[in-house]
Image 1 (cartoon, helix red, strand yellow):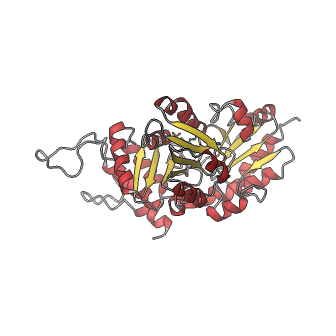
Image 2 (cartoon, helix red, strand yellow):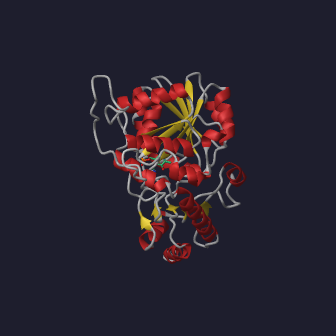
Image 3 (cartoon, helix red, strand yellow):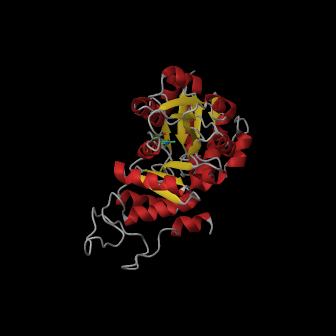
Length: 381
Ligand code: P1T
């Protein structure tokens, strides 16, 4: 079936008890057993919940994977992925990651004996040079948050597999509508479902999707053993959000392209990071690998002063962390999402003090452009 048909139907058969067309929110912690050792497939809600099972079946299908596991947040999903590894293991990760992922690696997991190196993963020769005897995982965000660097997923998978590594791709920025990493050879795809999958800025969550049965069994074990599961109401919100993922993503993409073009031609804007612009260093790869360019744009205003002027002046765009909701959000990566990245690394990665990030929503794009135009007009220099 097509993407939208799957999004609306997979995992969501009418409720067998009542015929309800929408999967109920099974707000329960436990399930009554008929007798010792006899139950209806559910024993305790950390281990399994029917609303969560429906979501996991749905998201596995949309990413064209066999198994999905939902977690309490994107960070909880990434954390569980890393607990597949053992002390002494080494990970090569994209040098530009969501600041929270970098913080988890550097300030939590290092203390448990995992080692991390950071490469420009759009340059696979750089990745290859960092592989060590104990390297187990290549961890890639593509496009990266916030400077929108693209990694060639198929080439990264070939390199990883030729060296005995697994490849994980954080697909949060594209959603499965625009990019399906498992089809390109990745072993794991991760999402902060908080973003496009939920789509309405009203719930935090995460998911891991994969094909390998043995690793899936271990992940299911870890989901239950470590316990950072997604609650039934949040699962239900994502199921509801995903039904409109395709139409929302088409509009995010259309608005993203129009805003990026507007910014690229604006005299107060120094640089625009958007894979849909022909000036983007990996524009051709983006066209090949993704079915759209999405709604995430970063642009450089030249200074902290200028960024502040824009962020202070916007009226329709909301100054907030997060992304992927129907409303347009605008943020300052250096002091918000990427504050935990050391200042010298930020500068080197292009996360300058003047960088502003936009998550284009699905409002009327003329209104968004008019808002940005008047805000950019407040820059004095
Ligand atoms: O916020 P949470 O659901 O825990 O997801 C973390 C996460 C993981 N991966 C990527 C690519 C992300 O962008 C995020 C969260 N990002 C933001 C909150 C943000 O504003 O960029």
